[in-house]
Amino acid sequence: MLRSNKDKQTAYEFVSIEQLVPQDHMLRKIDKYIDFSFILEKVRPYYCEDNGRPAIDPLVLFKMIFLGYFYGIRSERRLEQEIQTNVAYRWFLGLGLTDRVPDHSTISLNRRVRFKDSTIFQDIFDEIVLQAIGHRMVGGRMLISDSTHVKANANKNKYTKEQVLQNTKSYMDELNAAVEIDRKNNGKKPLKPEKEVVEQKEVKVSTTDPDSGYMVREGKPEGFFYLDHRTVDAKYNLITDVYVTPGNVHDSIPYLDRLERQTERFGFKVEAVALDSGYLTNPICNKLKEKNIFAVIAHRRYHPTQGLFHKWQFTYNSETNSYLCPQNHELPYSTTDRKGYRHYKSNPEVCKTCPFLSKCTRSKNHRKVVTRHVWEDSKDWVRTNRLSKSGKKLYKRRRETIERSFADAKQLHGFRYCRLRGLHNVSEQALMTAAVQNMKKIALHLAKQG
Image 1 (cartoon, rainbow, N blue to C red):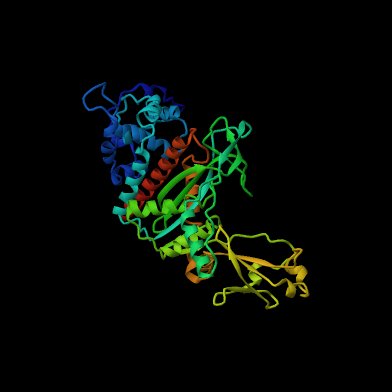
Image 2 (image 1 turned 90 degrees about the horizontal axis):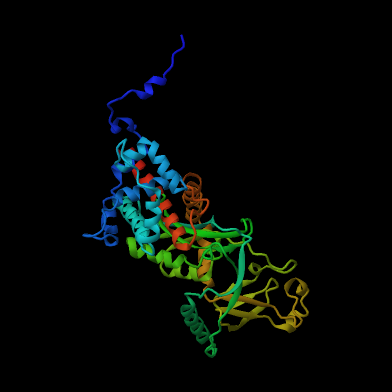
């Protein structure tokens, strides 16, 4: 016979919220294994101790933020509605079935006013990493870094063109010293001090989100983006560093500073790193070799002039500091320029009678010039590492570590697009996304270990 259950909705039941949340729910594991008590001390300077209205418990406020990132809920208004009806969310926040959920505007107001220009989100991320270190889930010996693009909350067709200063190279003093030493060792006079030249370039600046950068990369979408530069530890794939830049900043620019930041903040003793081809620059190779860090960096494809010999077909002789062409003619050292490149020049009298002249150079004076950076030895060392057995094994781990980390952030935690505008707000989103990813890994691992 047919029966109706509509009357059961009006029945009163005596029930505990504890009974309604499954024992194996992820939020139970998060609550058990992640210590959130540090948040109270971190936010204490931003609250008045003895004046004003009683504030919403900061733990409740930040746990609401974490819930939004745990489940990829992009809207704070939607987050409030989800908490209203989700028993597990209420349990995680310490709210009863009839308790009023804090208004969504409270989150945005605290972000825009109370925590504006603060380091609270970076501090929370760091504390989660320190907890992972305490559980021996971070070794700090093998680090893998890369960046991913995140679509800015901006229309790519709304922009102005502006002249901006070129990025200042942080390694210029070190490079100038290396050039001076190299010229002295080769019997060359020191270069005259160069007049300070301010280089500018024209870029597109979004009228919607001026902090974003217009990105144009081969194989990537074109428009206004941010870049999330991320580092993971190879032991359990925990994220140890997050740094956001506009989308038109090259991957290699912030890398060395972020590596140094991790060693100082967490006391890492880095032994090996694996990087994508975007990081194959002379300064990075030189610094990693100086620090005795085994570096594996992907090969970067070059596109030489069609029909001419490739540079690798010219053999470098370190003893004579010269190159040999494919016909075994010597190209002796000539000079070292300001950018750190040594110039090796052939003898035009020999070259003009060479049968392979057309495959070697198209210069009118029949002279072949090969350049080599003063830090090229470091780049050769990195290439050797990449081709070694251990180097191939290390680089192969990129797919299951850093690439997996980015994929989870975008697919599961809503990090494919920026929720807010401005570099500070996007940094908050990147840090909180990485923090909840770390929380999940810590809690699931410890729960599995019992």
